[in-house]
Length: 238
Length: 389
Image 1 (cartoon, rainbow over the protein chains, first blue to last red):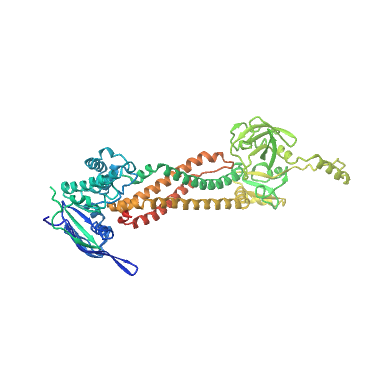
Image 2: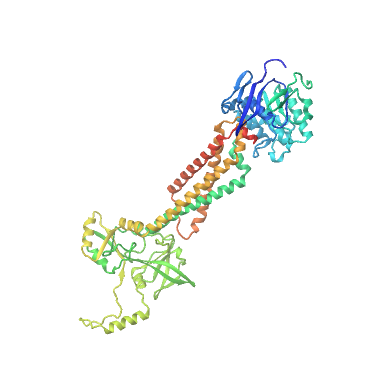
């Protein structure tokens, strides 16, 4: 990848005090991610994958180090991340293991809420949400509430919600963990498509080795440290 | 998108039951205050409507409502002679039980000084006012007598010629109006045994000096009070002083009668009801607060998600406030509906004054705001990453 990185993590650490012990959830991790990349983050449980994602997503400040998004220093030790709520809304989309849909809203409303929060007019928001769901093969489910959707459909609605504000960075934390292999693969292919078609940087924490072929590169973490970051993509993608 | 309304529509049954519960609680509090107002209104009904400026009662007593009063039935003639007095009426009131249609009824017999007073000061629901000085009666519908019915009181039959609605005494017994002479006759009814014993006593007594044949039974009928209407420009203080100077009478203004009734006779009851109303209101406040707080707590995960999506605090606060407001509003609406449907069937009058309802609504708004404030304080503490928990 060339050009300025979309996301730059510089020597980020996250330490927690647990009694007398200091837990080093993340211990001096540095990485750069570019627009259009699909990056896999792998590693054993407790290796710091989710912590890295939380720090990149401006949900936790690092204990040390800095986070830049589009060359802007956004997070550092002691940063007030609540003040970055608006920035996060415009720049980062989240997808989690659980879809976390609002149960009393329909699929369309679950997507359009993200737009309405960003002050998009309600009708326009619904229209775009319907369009997004259609693009994710959920056109027939737009008026269904989450309880009427399958796990895979719920996760696709969550992806649509993450895409609603057209964020340049999408962070996904084990988005396929609750899905069967077929549905899981479909979601990963969806991320691949999003990265290519929207020039978004998608970082996916996953345990699933079956999706390795879809990633541009894989970052491996162990004990809070980045072990390897191949300079070349795992597999070339158009 | 209005999240509060979306949530309510999704959980409509729960919302309806919550609002219904709050409605019942509020109805209880409104009912307690309404009962208090009703007792006061019932107690003051006669005093406020009978149109007396002064009440002449038994000396050294403050009757007839706060304590007993018994004066001669001819006292009105003496009172009438005082300068500045335009009209006088005799008044008597006492409780009576009697049978009708095989059931025991209770009524408060109230004597009307017919023909000076035919009862024109109260409104009739059906029938007419008194047109004869004997054996006609006007009954409140709460006594349960139909128009035209004949009832036996003491040794005479009385025909119900008129019906009123809502005319009861401070105990809630319906008023039964008869002429004052009939009322004193009913009040002075004695069993045969009492008459025989009186004759026995009288037979042993020395004969009267004037040679007249004395009655075996005391004949001096008693009334409770004389109601006085003042002439325009009359000097009240002078009139009161003149009547008090007789020694055997006391004189009270209508305002004093009101004060005696409310602050002497009924103060314990009023205090008791007010205390119950306060407790009910407190319970209502606690329950509503808990409901709104719990509803907010249930949504903490969704609130965290909204924060993750970048929702402003104002949007989250608005959602909590709107939901609390809607619960309060629907609860109040249901309370009003239930009150209007059920209170008319209660045995005692429940008076719902607009100002009381306004105060209730204001208190409810404050409760909802305070409860929301606790919920909002918790909601604002939630961090976006808690959506992962």
